[in-house]
Image: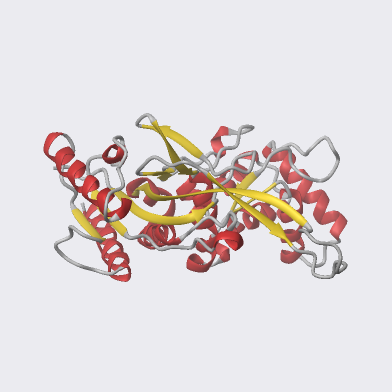
Length: 356
């Protein structure tokens, strides 16, 4: 079989106590209807935001990108860093000229910010600053500078530049919205705050309010197109895949964290290396899990394995390699062992491909 495709699928079951980790515009926990019932939901954006915070610890800040409208300021600062003899005014003018050559427009508010957020790496800012210092006016070279040396998260999550599609990066990773394996009903916590220095004859609370929350067993899924990632990151790819896996499993959005202290670890992790296509196994929970003795997690695990076995029999092929913890695994391993196993397997697969 040709192994031109290589995907890492990550499946997680995680129980979350009363919490409001991802809110909508009204402050309510996000939900979705799936299988005809309301589910708890945590958006992929919320989880990816926390993952990118972890990336700074895993890969170092210099290898992690940043989204900003202050691109002019970042280029000017880098020009000053590279050539301290230039005044701040000249650095800013050179940075502004560079943006004009690239075709990135400044905001009409005259605030020295570009019109929309742009996702950049420190290496790309440096490359643009070097071109600006040299006086280069070749648009193609500036575009090349913004295409080369992407940060790890740019290569994983992609970049869209509406004003110049040639600067776009296709995402190598996809993260699904997490949903509960069962039906949920949001509840309300009525709380009061006491004025510690109120008059003795003044009874009652200093503040009243409510917080909406729910609790759930979440199914979480993400996938990485390893071959696509390797096109942009080269030899750094096994480290990037390992870091993605580590951050996806361990990160947790922080909404209302101080109120609920809901930080939990996954109870079940199933990681599959595939050479056919990514396979989201949320169909295991299209029929909502019903709580009996043992709670939702135990029943969710059983539903996951039953659906997975049926899918492999009828449609998708078995994965090349599987790692995980929880009930149902032949080989028991902890999370550090999973990380090392995935890293070694990805490195070996990419080396095999290069050898051919």
